[in-house]
Length: 460
Image 1: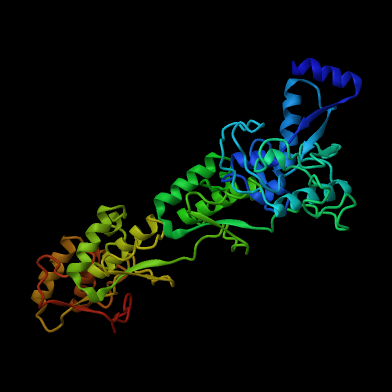
Image 2: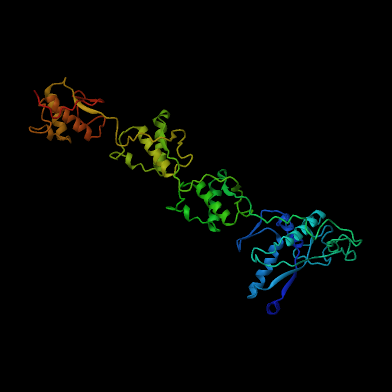
C-alpha cells in the first residue's frame, strides 16, 4: 500500500504527512529516553550506532525513521515529510483505551505531563522553525512543515484527566494554558553543539580480568586496535592498563563520545582533561635486584621460584656466561631480574617475599666478571714442592707454553715466577674455583690485588 502511494507523491511532487508525538515515544520508555532530548532542550545527544549520526532531539530521530523507511522502499529521497500533528500535553494521564493506542505500555509514562514541559516543548519547536533549523542529520536540507495540535483543549474528549483532552494551547474559555509566542522569544534556540572534548579512561583498580573483558569488547565492537598489536605504533607501553585505555578510548571516540559509550561495566569513565600521551613510549627502565640482607636461605627459595616460573637461568648454571661471580646474591639478582623483565616489569613481579627490590638505575654489569683474583706461588716453600705443583698444573689444564725456553714468559727464569704463572693459568681456567684439585694450599695463595705484570721481563 505504501509504495504505490509514495510513487503517486513522487510523481505529483507532493509530500507524505504523519502525526508525530515525541511525548508518546517518551511515555513508552521514560527510563530509556532522556527527557531533555525528548523536549528539545540542551542535551549531550544520542548516537545512532547504525548510521553514526548524533541526534539532539527525539523529533528529528522520528522524522529520520520515516525518511529511512521511505527510502527502503525505493528512490523516494525527494519525497518530503510534513508533520501534521505535534505537541506535548501539560497535564492528564495516559488511560488505556482512552482514544490513542500506545504499543507496549498501559500506563507508566514518567509523569512528564507538566505545564513546564509542555511550554518548553512548544516554544523550542516554534523558535526552531523561526530560526530556520529545519533539517535532520539524515536530511540536513529537509523542509520542516509542522502543525501544532491543538488550538483548544477538548473538554468533551474523554475524562478531564485524560491526556487526550489536554493537547490544546488554550482552554475552552480562550485563556492560554501556558505562555508561548508564534513570533518566538526573540532568542532562537541555540544550534546544538557536540559535547565538550572528552576521553575515556580505564580504572586500573578493577583488575586484569575486567580490563581484559573491556579490551576484548572494545576491539570487537568498532575500536581500532591495530596500533596496540606487536610492532604497532602504540604497542608500548606493553601493559594491560595502557592497551585497554587505548582501546576503550578508540571505541568512545568512534562512537562520537555518545553517552554510555565509556562504561564497560564500570571499568572506565569519562575524563575532560586530556590524558598524557604514552603511545609508543617505552616505560621507564627498571631492574630487579636481590636484597642481600635477607640471607642466603631466602634468596635461594626466591631464586628457585624465579627459575621455575619463567626466568631464563641457563646463564647462571655451572659453565654459563653469568655463572661468575658465583655468589648467591649475584645468581639471585640475575634470576630475579630475568623474571621481572619477562613479566613486562609488572607491579609485584620483583618482590619475592621481600627478597627483591626494584631499582631505576641500571646495576653494574657483573655478569661473567667476578671480583678479580689471581693465584701466585708461595715462595716460602721449597723448590721441590713448587716443582711438583708446577708439574701438576701444567699437566692438568694450565697453558705452560709461555714459560718454556724461548716462550714469551720464560723470563724471569725462576722457580717462583714459573710456578706463579702455571698456578694462575690453572686457577683462571678452573673459573677461580676455591679449591683447585690437588694443588697444595701451602704452595700457593690467592691475592685480590693484581701483581705487577713481569712477563716478559729479563732476569738480571
